[in-house]
Image (cartoon, rainbow, N blue to C red):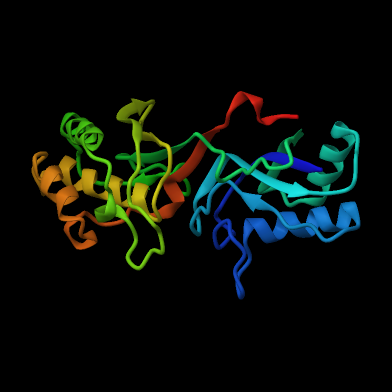
Length: 247
């Protein structure tokens, strides 16, 4: 039987989602918990591979098991076993071929920036000391919709068949005293969101013009785009699946 887990995690203590040979990952911690509780070797597949330090307010992972269980009791037991920085919110049966990564219709990320020094925000937001021109940053965001190939924002030496992504949403807005960037797409390349944000921060600081976003994307060169902003302010916030994926 195949199950989907809905979960969230604080990425600060982990070397990303995916298992690493010499570093602790979110995937490893959850697999160990499931293996212990179910009494069988469990491997999970996540909907994405967040980098070291990146958080997720919504992530999905799937696993196969012969066990059937009562949901509320299982969730209580699993959450009791897991550390405080990982929480399992739901578990449900899906069709045997359902896949958290390949069946996802879209993913949405949030990046948080603060322009005011705040001792309670610095661990989960990026502090930018100088003022940012948000209107220019939003103008640059609109340019993303004109393109599909985002190789310029991809980490170098990434093994992918295509650099094409369908951008569905991209906007900057203020929430209280933070500047938030929300971006939604059918898929994302490695480091893509952080490189996009870094490029737009440079635009907001007046280091490059809005119109240069076109030439940056057309160049398909990572060296032409801006810097990668720190991982600690990036959150995976929503993943969408077909309504009929549940069994």
